[in-house]
Length: 435
Image 1 (cartoon, helix red, strand yellow):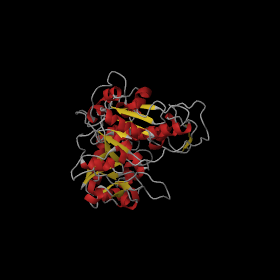
Image 2 (tube, rainbow, N blue to C red):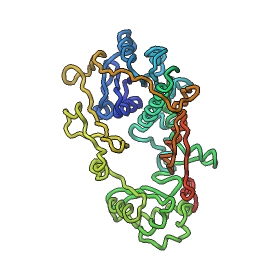
Image 3 (cartoon, rainbow, N blue to C red):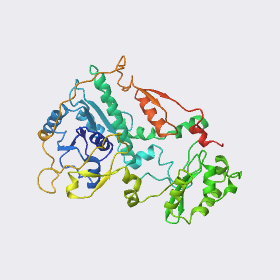
């Protein structure tokens, strides 16, 4: 159950639950400001909706009746409302329902009651400080970066807590306090590590990489991106048509390219500026196996042959599809091999006349019985809710960044993560060093 009047982190977490088979009921206050239609379609497809005001006795009673059959409660109500209307007590003290509060600064601390926006949270988290050109004003990150990143965290931690509750049915279900600010701070990865290890303060580097020579540069019809980290230097120099640069001491090492960055970028620009971004991309990938890409427009993303082949852009089933035939939305970035991807469900329409914003009464909400707790092959001794995946063992064979970050989160949730690195492979740190 979502209790929310916003299209933010809770909405995105609920979207993920709905996509992967959960019955999601979204509770909105009567008369709330209508969502932007595109956001509503993207975030609320496949959810059931109804209106109830938790500030009234009638609304509270309706929400309580729903909570009795829910496994997870998500809310992004203001801290004052969470406290005044006891939203984290819905379902009663003995309920097996996992409760998650998602607020800008958390439920405690001197900022707990402060208001915030995406821009203010990104600034306080230090991400704005790192975005933009050196020597110029910092820039915020467009879109809903803070909400969707935090929403992904909410989804994973709520799911882990539900696993814990099913494995330990005799222990109280956990209540989780998610701070969007702290979620963003956790995304820095190497910012704090570089300070702790080297005393280095990261700075804005514009469209360049801070640790290796890579950038976005102009070409004939747009922009292309490149990187020469690791063992990419020789094929990159050959692609530029400059075999003489392979052993040039100015550019033959990552450290040298960083020291002579302006000269290096100018050299790359001169060699490739007359070509199209598609020409650069295909030669780099297919001839030289270089990690190069290009700045794609939305139209180019929609027509991308690779995304088309994988069925990433998917039609909506029902709901908004009838009002806008042919509309397609982003599908899942992962899939289960051997199984069809989940259907992207459309947005339910409100009850009443066309244009109405009145959602159905709570008794119309479809409900399934709560599953019985299952067994646990490796139960933990104490059922520590702060380590919901305790007893789960993970073998991590990943490299560089995305995989290790996943392992980091699984370990933070209590899993026993064994990371194996090949001795013949360069470490991530070596990719940034002078080699």
